[in-house]
Length: 227
Image (cartoon, rainbow, N blue to C red; front, top):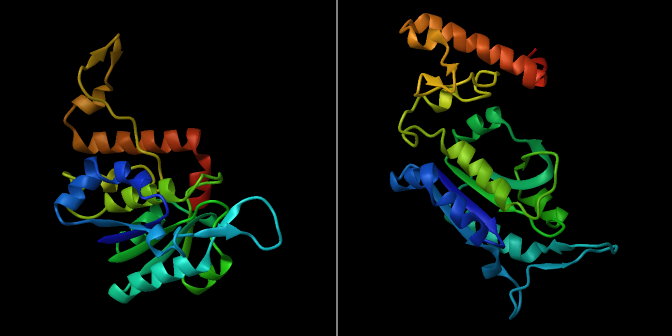
């Protein structure tokens, strides 16, 4: 799977995407992540990529020409399944959407900055818009890292245990159950006896019941959405 991330600040993404599971996926050749510096497509000697917005108001807007040149250049070299703009007013990102994107081959992510990007870029080039939550960040870089991490870990072979991702929270419409490891007794707190029983059916039933109970208590909205 290939990600092209268009950003004015590639250094913000170098850390999150070059360690742990994301690095492992790249080392295995299962995941390719390229950071595309929008400044390389900037205008004039100063490589300008933003300007004041028409109509006045605070905040700069990312200009059409650099973004269009960048997108068209990338599209001339590969066919993209999705060109995604990270924006607070996009579709809410969730596990279902991550699962869908994991089936794609080539994805371009556009990171907004400043006040956002010129609306005409959204109308002409963008195929999907995604929000990671109802809040505003300084730019789309952190959102892009979250999308890549969430999608990339679903690719077969990226995780050491390929079934691990299938047992994560939200995959079955529930939060994950509690988990325990050694020691069996910690400050007089015992591991639930069923987990030590070796009875796989009983363990799976316990985990389901705990997932259901935890979801009802902490995120009842998930159950309502699945009705």
